[in-house]
Length: 531
Image (tube, rainbow, N blue to C red; front, side, top):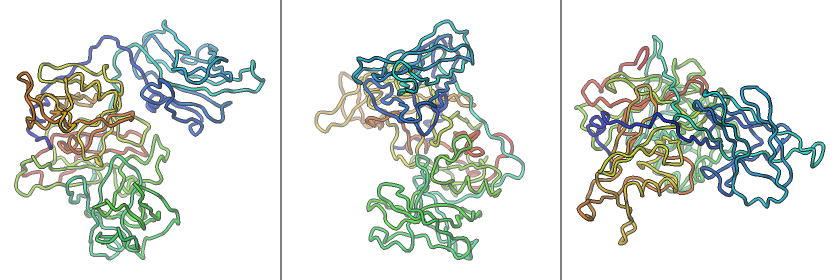
């Protein structure tokens, strides 16, 4: 169920607070914003016994080069390295701020590999500050002169204030221009590709694609597809001017098979030649769209971390865009816009006419491909009072995914915590989960406006009344054995969104704006300066 803009505007005045006192901050092994595992291609994520957040990192190859670099996400005078003992030997050195090294012994000849993680190294007398830790795998000469064992990391643990990372707020230079196109529900964009692009003399006929921020790479039905499931779709036709085939076959989404091609992509009045995407010759029978273009970040800290750059980052690299920014003005079913105001997608910047007030630019997990918020603050109110649950929940990363039609998905252990906080229960007649109808959740992403986002986590349709409390279906769900929270259309669609990719992933940020539903939203006006 969509939530109205009026509801969110009202709730933006609500507050969420995390105590300024010190708390235990556990940093999972996959937190790429704080941790570097080197060599990067030699580590594997494994769900070992008792793994924190469900996964630990193990050095499976190049063990003589193993290194971990960790930067505290918050000030602390304490530090713990948690990992697993190994039966085949194991030694490493730990150095803090390039100071003296301490040898850590992680060998236990009696280990059978089933033990949970333990604190391999601890220190409690550091200065209260942000520190840098270097851990290096070294030879265990007790086993052999050149024996390097399987260094590993479950998590790091600190005691300090809850981390508050700073956002990268983009600036848009003079001359910034927007190219705007139509947007269907939900996040379905209309693109002219290849021979249909006006740049190539085409009519501008479009295909309808999901702009999926939870995926990289992409596909579109190819005119040469003979799979029966391709019938009934608009399709991509190659151009004679800009087409090239890399002869690389990719399996993109759920059985879709594509040839990786380069051709023209047109959105609105901008055409980007030599853009890479997948021309599908087999597709999933359940797909109702003509394609899916992944809009996750293609670069991680300057390094390509997807199959190829998306067409927006490609346009920036070609100098066609002054800013690699993708903006969504998605109208929800409960919105009441002025006459002439419709959903729009734009590339190149931020549209001042599409939001009111200031944009709330939020820090992201980095370097990483997904659009994810780290260390966000979370509180829950079952209708009887707000509870700060930031440190109660186990998983601290939230993924924003326009390809997810739902509201909020939680890993199973955090789902159990939420059910307990609101005193929810499962309907014995149909298995549906019921929460008190007034239940809300509040998020704060440490954004540039320090804005709080409060929203109902039920559909507010009364199903049962128990001891005077009304219960409704929850709009949250148990996502199973996952490591991150995820939110989709039912939350994101209530805001004007701007995805700033940064220069090859450096300085990327995600901006939230309160949607402007007035008549002025029918026209576009690019922001110059800071949004």
